[in-house]
Image (cartoon, rainbow, N blue to C red; front, side):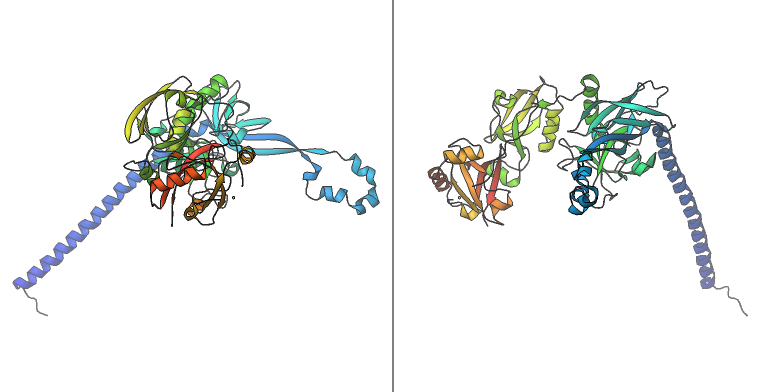
Length: 489
């Protein structure tokens, strides 16, 4: 066999050797990179482990017991059986008469909580301890205490309980939930399904979640860290091991984890906990307005450049808002220096203020910016809403509405004042009015921002408005007024 030493052959060998060298170097670099990635992952893993080790001792398992009474009629089938002629034939009617009318039952439940002070104060959810006769708190070191309720706040689902005569209690530091951002790592610790000291990890999916329908005041942290039954009241921790939320609820169609959990921001809980500790109850600030978010349609109707802000649809008499000169139709855009996101944002911020606090509202009225100072009052104990219900016709057909004038009889029936508007008598299915949530019995107080109390008023307003397929109504539903824009098909 002959070998060739031609320049072409040597060049070919050099290419092969160079390729092998580069390939080998690549393998080495890859191995080096893999080693580096492993080291980084291990550091992250150890960071989580260290946070959990420090936090776990301060996370408690709460068991509650409640005694309830139930009538025998509430026991399925027993009442029917005791009254059956066949039963009386054998035992006689006197046997049934001797039966106790009620029977006591023990209801048991469980949840989580976390220690916030050396003298035994523990934060948890109201729904974990509400109505409990006995509250037992078990620590990670297997110590067990009987706790008492210091105070609860059902409107936010926060509760403060306390254990007596504790020694060497571990405490969890409270962080700043306002600093949380979507995508940030968080850790949940609790007792789901009775499995003590369970740890789950995830990220903050979103902040400022409201209108979920869980609590009256909502500003939830949404997380995909697994939260299951029994996690309620446990802490949600940031990477520094600080509590940033109280795990409260999960969104689920099955009752189990589906990747969406909600936690009460710790900043909201701090304010509540302080009041509960000092007074045993929560006092909330009150402005005295009915409000709604400004949609695109409402923005156009009120001559605003864009949607956004909070529309005042009603100002209550003898309220802080009334005293300060706030008016229906005003659009609130800022509270002091804070730009308001939505209705929930304003409600939460006002509620957290102490009575007597002065705030500056930045509003838009008739297209002009204005500032109004308001002194916040205490929220009335009874915020119950009045209700109104049904009744027959005139000329808003293209919006799917039939209305009639408010007679003395109708006004008395539905709880309105005579001459205060037109009452809706019928709503066509799938019409703009139906899609906007209007029903028979709703009172129309204004049309295109003008008071209306008769068919003549309505006709004049519609004539002035000209031919348009949009109309702005101010309506009263369940005692409160709000604005609705209807667009004809």
